[in-house]
Amino acid sequence: ALVDKAGFRHFMAKEIAEQPAVITRTLDAYLDNGRIDLPAPGLDFNTLDRLTLVACGTGHYACYTAKYWFEALARIPVDIDVASEFRYREPPLDPASAALFVSQSGETADTLAALRYCKGKISTIGAVVNVTESSIARDSDLVFPIHAGAEIGVASTKAFTCQLVVLLLLALEAARQRGTLTEEEVTGRLTELRALPGLINHALALEERIGRLARRVAEARDVLFLGRGAMYPLALEGALKMKEISYIHAEAYASGELKHGPIALIDEHVPVVVMAPTDTLFDKTVSNMQEVMARGGRVLLITDAEGASAAGDGVWETLILPEVAPFLAPILHAIPVQLLAYHTAVEKGTDVDQPRNLAKSVTVE
Ligand code: G6P
Image (tube, rainbow, N blue to C red; front, top):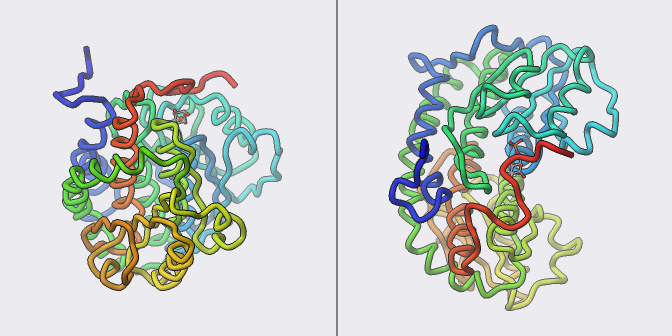
């Protein structure tokens, strides 16, 4: 076979483990002497009033994370949507806007239709794809390859983190062009980004621990994922991964919405995965966590050393990731979330690489 499992039990395990290497490759492709080097002719972010990001599945959660980055770093308003809604909603589009279509395969039917809807209505159409010889790439003005390499496991892992890296680089380039970050600030962020593959290696070292935890999670009927800010889309991705391969019902909520519904579901049978790096929102998340624990909920906290000690008593389990700049936390935290879904699925004995009813690429509506 062209691509084999390289000694791993599943393609998904191999693809999770490959992330430091493939992200390094993506960074090599987009960075030249510490500066961002976009595929020609690049994108002029100064002329844009807004940005639209459209995708399906995991790609949609990459777009959702990127919305936080583009808005915070480059002060560009961003609209996001799943392609199946976008295409039929017939949204009015600002001619001074650009749209990015994010797709691993480049062949998802709804995403392609959404792209075609935008043709002639906006300034630029960009494709963020893994497969560059694809319909979505061909129909776009600009192509931003994610360089993840072939992804075989149906549940996307390395394509997700590479999509995040490319979208983050675009957000940093937008910030540089628009002057919302100085050249020095951009360079500083890029240096931090360069260190990310090394940090991901540390996160991968948690695998054994996560494998043991997964035995307990595998007994659950429902799992809840919570996150705030840019960690909220990652909570959504965590729940999606869990559903896709373990068949356990999983749901994600923005931590602040907890009391508007999902708290009613909390009891000792529902593991609650809380993604909370130490950032400006940390204290708020801790108080949400305490609300869960007060109702007997079992909290699995994914944080860093500082967060672990600040979280106090009563947490069921804590996974400690290395310290990372807050803007990079969604990429680093993706690793334990993928490993948790993977090992829960292995524990349940599902067909991890080919989960029931799912396809790698949905080319018909
Ligand atoms: C399917 C796959 C997902 C993927 C989604 C979008 O549902 O199982 O892993 O995220 O399609 O695919 P695309 O190729 O457009 O990223």
